[in-house]
Length: 391
Ligand code: CMC
Image 1 (cartoon, protein in one colour):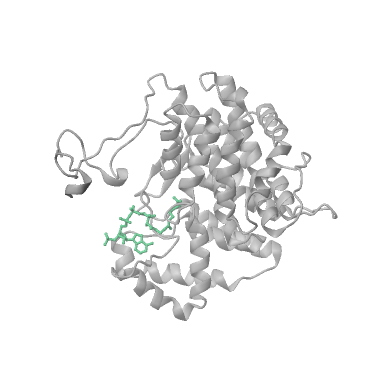
Image 2 (cartoon, helix red, strand yellow):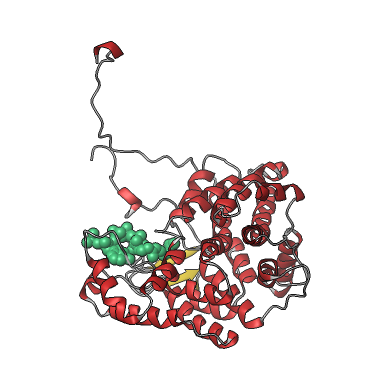
């Protein structure tokens, strides 16, 4: 391999040092700043976890209040941003809208694009975390032709997002506490996941000194793909297509067939060769949401049966393919009322915390250099140009 190590897909290359998130894929362990994801999902809130990821320690009561207040103050969008929405077709995918609108934020905040100043970096990070629920909710409102709702700062981060998504100006919107808690937990579960494809994209884009809004737009673009954040949408579509448990064996056989591109969506992971600890919490949350909303979507039974059948199959056992975070999240989001096209947008909303925390960590490092991988050249050796008439 000449002077370089050849590592397609970076399967064995650490691209950076980071103190944010630890994963032991063989044991199924995920820690944020040392705290197990299960404990954070159970006892923390998304705001608290965001503070932890950004600052390294859990906040005191006052610190949490200050942080929540600061984020709340930045939830509104510049009024001119509405016009960006009008430029999209009504059937635009919310991720397409988010790529555009988040990238456009850089044109509204010239003051905070001096990334060498830690204060500016902090304000940009807070703006991004605060505005993402408004941006995502408006993408949904636009798709269904309902008026945009302004944020209501008397609500929690997550309650506010639910209201902007499902509320209408003509009526009071009542946030259901169990739904708010479940949604907040889903945000915690998606907040960060070390050097996944979209976070690596944000770091690489940021390594050139690009502003954080543009870098986050790059992260959103990368997250969109079905092998990454788009898997939650693909997983629910797959479960609905399977329909009933008696049809599962056919899909398992398809997933095992090397000549068929079909894969079990929501299954397998680059790092986890064990049960994804986020999937465990997600599965439990499905039942809580069903109980609170008094619904029972048969797709959950299909998901449970599919999991059991796959885990008892030699192909999945040998390749160590387990359900990942995306396998059950769609079932919950659908019960709450989100269309599948919004699923990845919600992932982006939550992952913004990880993106900006990792971006800040990178820029704060005095040894930071531009990310610039090399390649193994496989093209022709040097040859002489041939004029068009002689070809
Ligand atoms: N169904 C069937 N076979 C699979 C699956 C699956 N879901 N996932 C991996 N395999 C097989 C794959 O065919 C390969 O077989 P072989 O060694 O015989 O060629 C082997 O397992 C290893 O797969 P890989 O694609 O080389 O592994 P990877 O680490 O490059 O890919 C993955 C990881 C997540 C892209 C992949 O497991 C996948 O496509 N899963 C379905 C999509 C999905 O659920 N993505 C969400 C990931 S978690 C959330 C996130 O990070 O966004």
